[in-house]
Length: 164
Image (cartoon, rainbow, N blue to C red):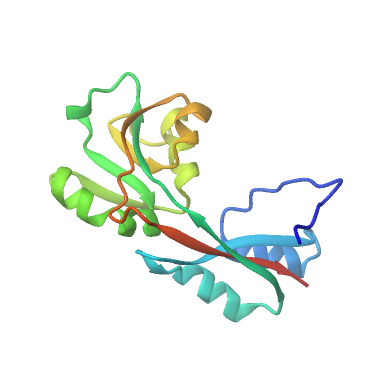
């Protein structure tokens, strides 16, 4: 049975560490974070955070993850010199990156959506591409270079719903 939550507020805490710290400090009632991907494996930052905090697992669920390569609209594809994204996203797209982007530098970022936002606001160099979800193109006024760049067509991430 699906739970219907009323009167909620979403807080974007970015990392599993921040989610579990928020639960401990009673700043949030529930938190969601990824723990494993079918292609990229265990989310190490989540495992390290889980080892530091006491919490209850209320639920676990999977989401099909589809990555896109995004760029600023004012940059030509050939001018991309670096691709930034979360370590897991880079892992999930490693063969695509080797095949199509072997001559660019890769930069690990703490979050895929944050990389997209930072590219949009100029915090990242404009000649950077980012791997993120398609919605980030709309949210941050970026252009989709290519959709579905993850190596596996079926690319699922398991998430934990945590509470005190």
